[in-house]
Image (cartoon, rainbow, N blue to C red; front, side, top):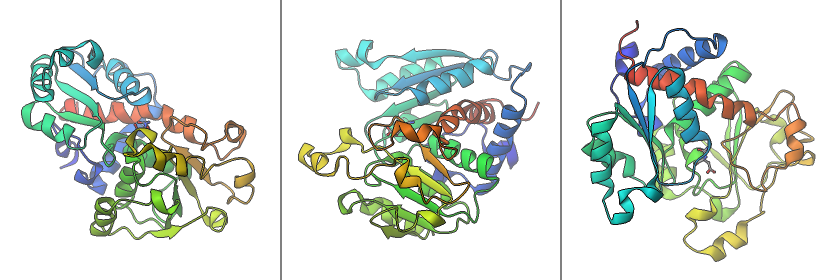
Length: 311
Ligand code: NCD
């Protein structure tokens, strides 16, 4: 157990990891944050490939930065100038990367793409988001941010806001919370953005109790962690449905006026108009720190998956 539980493993869903696995990751990320200057390059000689078939700023670049900081080299598949344009399949493409790299971090619009890649590749696959359910490393860094800023994950009250229907960051965060003992977990969204049945069923199966609310106002005084999401415009099957809900929720300085003292606002980013820029100057704004924690958490993850037994 311990580091062995991580070594050589695919990271497809946060549900594949136990609380003890997550705690090990967070302890390791803690020591990276606390000792940012590292002399040991634990991944020297390794190659990490990034293969992102959907837009990404934070996930792709923080995986690259994390790999480089650990001494690995990074190669990047740019789908728009790759042989995918000549009709090469996803599985052939991943087979090629398997021969060139020691680990592949990937993102794809279709759910199951990371699982498919893990079946054709012998090297570990890290899912940087596929479809609208799984984004494990995001959930890991989100939980790490809570632990780091609030000192614990257990016992806090959470409100997950917005597009809980299509935002994989929201679903994965809820799955991650299920490994802990949170206080109240409130889902706040208009009717049409409530979780899909598969997500609802999974939440139930993993034993996470949630409450549904229509607005944040009525519960905000009691919430420790506000988890905000962008409306996932690109995942709406019907643009008219998007038009109906766009702008239906927004966090501003005003909406945080009654927020609990010490509460934090998280957002996986990018934001559109659901999170006002004026919130950035409030002490509650934690999303920029959260994005920065992407590097140490992904360093810890890459080190655990690729680095082998403790040196
Ligand atoms: C998220 C994603 O791609 O799921 N972004 C990220 O990884 N930080 C959130 C989003 O796109 O809204």
